[in-house]
Image 1 (cartoon, rainbow, N blue to C red):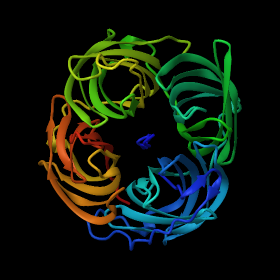
Image 2: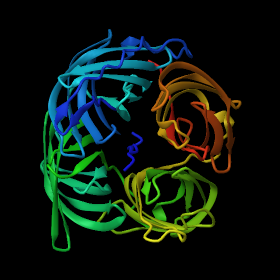
Image 3: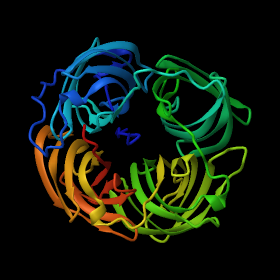
Length: 508
């Protein structure tokens, strides 16, 4: 079976490790590091402190995932760090010590080299700010992408009262079938978990499964375990937990059968009723159907009366592009017993996927974590769909003038024209008048790693839908503006199922 990245469109510190529990060295020559590009004001001193990373990727035979920490000293050295890495054939390397070096270029592009007992790993990255960045792995044998975030200098204990986390998980079930889940878990007295999970196991949707368990967090790390019940069947999931901030926990499975990775976001306020959940929303999903990889982004309008209207999306289904697909449907908040949970049923007026049902859990009224629970394609029997992602409230009236400043660029996906897997990070300056210029670093299966590639393009934004077009990383894209600092995009080249983001950079 051909392996694709199934990402959280969210770092990687994956070595070429965990092949049936063993390891091997990465002998890739270390590049000299990025140079040139726009002068945003970043330096090596911009990366300083302890960062939490969480990622996923693939090699020739396995799906891989990692969570860990590294401490950057502001002068280019990483003296301490550790990582937990797992794969989908039950291989695990837990608590591996790592150290290394790094450099940061003036435009936020950088390079990190980490070494552990399993070998050396090289990661080109780009900073959106001194506290966050995205990266990919420079390796001939691993395709991996992800992010890193700065951890507070003092890690507080979990609340002794109650707090609810919305979780998003992806990975594979014990039979190596694609799996994804979203849900809400309430932590009581800092230890006891209760909540509800919605899951999609290889196209089979199990909704509103009751979940109970425990969460133990000592300083910046801990464990989590919860059990769901579906009819008479109970399933237990065990995780290592890494504290990123009061609002984010990173998760990676440690049990012997399931391969899962993801995160938990602290839920704040939520919409208590369908009438309170309204406005333009940008949807960004990725996953699989029976044909192969599926990437989509679009915009929905929620009218407050349970109707989805004035909605469009663009998606790439295993190398076939469907553009400007009109949507309509219904949605509702499901009830007080599952705060922030909502469902939607969408029907398309064109394209291969005629309907799609969604379940979402609000982190806040402006952000939801989303799971696609069902899809129908009239030309394919036994059609199944598995996607997950997020949905964010869109700022109305965005135009070319709102897309202005330096943006950190992240892109990944699969090219069906012989290039294979593709990963890229970079910096672009948008001038507010429709012109882009910048520099990228990228890797493909067939071309290897390329550094310091200059880029220029034009862009155009429809100020009604916030939908636009451009060329990014040498690839034509369709994008949707969430606001002036966050842009979701997919490739508009049918042969390249790419997905990524542009994030406004905050200079040091």
